Length: 200
Image (cartoon, rainbow, N blue to C red; front, side, top):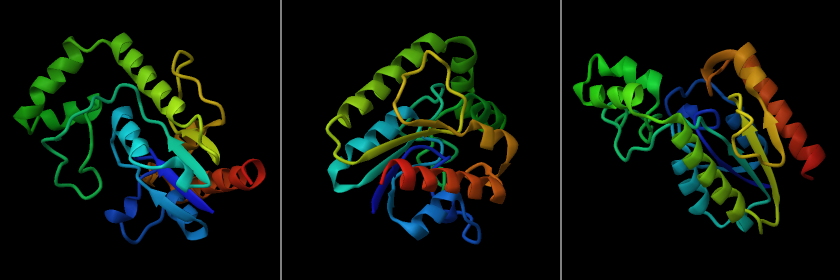
């Protein structure tokens, strides 16, 4: 079974930085033929680019891990661009504020978040891109699975086959994919079970 994974840090391969540990995506890759394009810290626009770089019908299953609508796209992150895991990271408020104390380039970004960013506009753009992703996959012959490790507001774009995994994030925080070893095993079992029961 060939599986395409697109998304953010909750699905990225963290072994590029932490080689002696495994996340749920690594457990999935041990069982299936997985192409993983997910990138730590990426916005919905970069997830859109991941998906549109592929022919969906080259795969049996596509798993999409959805990110926060408050992530703001940037082509070049002034702090994380050299990091093996976060080299394609976009801006999110807490990270920007933390690093702005040591990096002047991020002070203006923090100011934008605090004084100018419209959350209504961010959500509107997020939903437009999510809808575009959904429309692109309309003629996909395989099976789609949407996952979110973050709580999704009711007014965010609604996908079929979306599994809310935020309870695992809340109860099993840790290093790999933001989950503990137990959390990663639980998430793998949920996704693997869904593939075998619902998507076979």
